Image 1 (cartoon, helix red, strand yellow):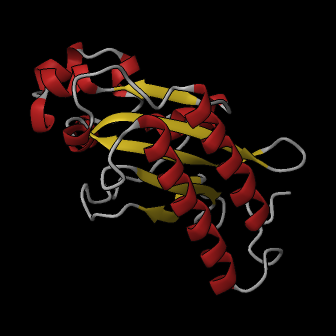
Image 2 (image 1 turned 90 degrees about the horizontal axis):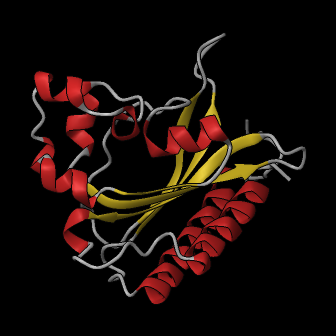
Image 3 (image 1 turned 60 degrees about the vertical axis):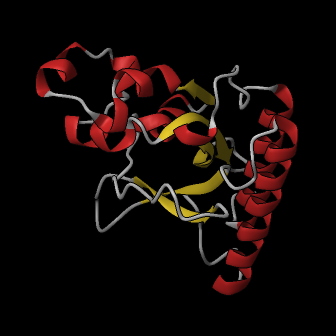
Length: 195
């Protein structure tokens, strides 16, 4: 979990996170050929809400040059969604969701179809949560942020909306893109006091 007191004034910390995310966004666009208007990069930190509550991933910063797709407002916990899987595994997770988006356009999943969906696609989400997410993103990469002791403190997520993915091969799994995400994770980890 990140320690807000270590990182200095909130505005300076937020500015450093935002700069790191914009830099990552532009590098990912250059490395993948994805239009910079489609790339999104978000920093998530593990946060406890209230006394003895289950930890959740809280958005520390989000950068994309458009406001679509809008944030989902799902409470992300360990094992839920791609960022939750990154947390559960404490490892990088990359998913190409274009096939699922084609099968369930705009999250068109009924309760009976949901019962048939594999856990690999459900990713710990409820029917309502999966309906919000399927058809939104075509490709997502999540890379863990760890403190100096190797403990998971959050992750960096890079995503491409389904409308911006095209028909080619997935591109966020490229070594160069994964390196950018890992470097961004290290930078943001230091900013939030995880070094």
